[in-house]
Length: 202
Ligand SMILES: [Zn+2]
Ligand SMILES: [Zn+2]
Image (cartoon, rainbow, N blue to C red; front, side):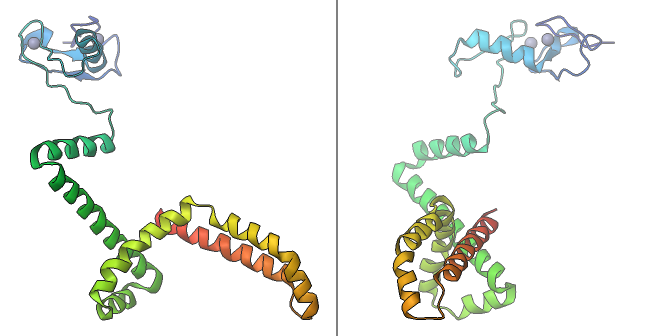
């Protein structure tokens, strides 16, 4: 026995890859519908108003419409929106800031443990001033993100190029020092630091 879609009348035979849903109280052959067909049908009924209620034309059961295409970001925003309307804007903002802050603290602590080692990192943080940790740890991810967003090493190199002529003169005054070596050393250090930042972020 094949399922058949009440929108397009196609059966399992016609399309073996289509996704099927049973969204209402209908029984028998009319209970099945293609996911895509139902979506199209609902869209036509709603005419752009995504909050409009839509019901099955046969059993009159209201369709529960979920939006799986919207990613987790939209879900979080929606949740935050509902929180704000319930708990008041200030409480919700406080919760948001608090959770972002604690995420940053956790990320900072994880970064410290990754850089200096798990046990050593824990030791360092246990011995450190708690106030220092509460301010210092969240700045680590902020610095990492800034380090990734701002092309600061280009800026440093530009500055270096601008002043390297003077340094050349300096190095000719002080024999033994080569500004070219310094330049490449700095470029290497800058790109290595950037690599580290990217590595820590992802
Ligand atoms: Zn269909
Ligand atoms: Zn129905």
